[in-house]
Each structure stands twice: as C-alpha cells, then as structure tokens.
Length: 257
Image (cartoon, rainbow, N blue to C red; front, side, top):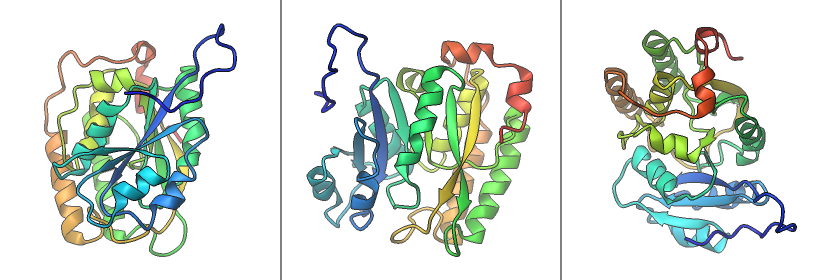
C-alpha cells in the first residue's frame, strides 16, 4: 500500500514518523466532512466502511481519505480492519460521528512517541445536553469499576479516542470484533504491563443516531460484550512495547487524571 504522506524535505535525515487515524464508519455521510477536515496535517485518515448505504465510502474517498471495506458488521471488526490496513508507526482511533475532534489526538501521539505512555485514551467530557445519554454513562461507569477490579487501572472512561504504536497493538492479539474491542485493547495492554493514561476531551452531540449506545438495548448489548471480555483469563505472552516493561504498580493503579 502506498502512503500519501509528503516526502521529507531532508532525505538524508531520519524518516518522518507516520500516523494513521482509523475511523470506523457506518452511514456517517453527514459527519464525514467535519471529521476529515480536522485530521492533523500529514496524517492519513483510514475510513473503514462497515456496510454503509448512504454513500459514506465514496464521500470519504472524495475528501482524501483511504477507504477500507469491512463487510463483517461490528465496531471491533471495523477498528481491527483499519489497524491491519495501516502501515504507519502510530495508529489513532476516533469515532466518525462528529462527537470527537480528531485534531485533539496530536498531543496523544506526541506523548506516545516521546515514551511517556504506551496507550492514551480520551476521557469524554460532555458538552451540552444530549452529548452522552444517561444510560450510556451508566454502562460506562459500571464497566470502569469492573475494569478496576480486573486490572487495577483507575480509568473513568473506555471511550473510542486513543493512540498507541501500531506494532505493539498488533502484538496484543485482539480477537473481539464487536463492542468489546475497545475494552479488550485496554485489558490486554494492562496485562502486558503497558503504561495507560487518559486525557480529558470535549464530547459533542453526535451527528445522526448511535448504532451502539443510542438506546438502552444497544447499551445492554455493548455491556454484555464487554463483560465477556472481562471474564477472559489474562492472555499469556501478550507482547508490549519496551516502555511498557517499566510500568510500576503505582502507575497502573494510580489515578491518571
């Protein structure tokens, strides 16, 4: 796959660090222009079309994004298809519904590349009514408590905005292809000794209807998927970045905000 990144001005110097943003997409044509125009300069947007019928794939391509088609439905299936399609040094994830500004990922990427953390998550801070339904918040809170019991991590949110090195993510051997994918990433990273942090990000009312947490039923299915992930035994031999080997018990159990 050929990358659309501009060539470094000084060809004798070190190669530029490449960053991809994976954007799982199911009927998000109304939100795509807002999202893609906020991708940081020099980064590549990988829009993973998960069966859209509203022309999202063609629109994303016309806006300069790389489009990957993933016929198997599921948030995890779309995210993982984007991860495996990437050949960048660093991979970020962000929702494609205009609820999160992908431009906010720049400091996440800088800190991962600097070695201060191995996985950085965005802690969603709702901006205005309707940004985060109460049932979705309740499900997220319950999962955060279960995650703490399982791993010792004191995280407040398991949101979709995140950044990590691509090869390290692939080394986690993620298998969930439904709503449990984001949680499985965190659990396996914790088991591998990664340093995991969260940063506040504004969370806006999404454009269009949520496919996962827009209803109590959708939220319940997501929580069910994630509880199954938490019930898995620790993955043996899960690889982690070299920096993760320096994680201490204090870093893993301390409040990261």
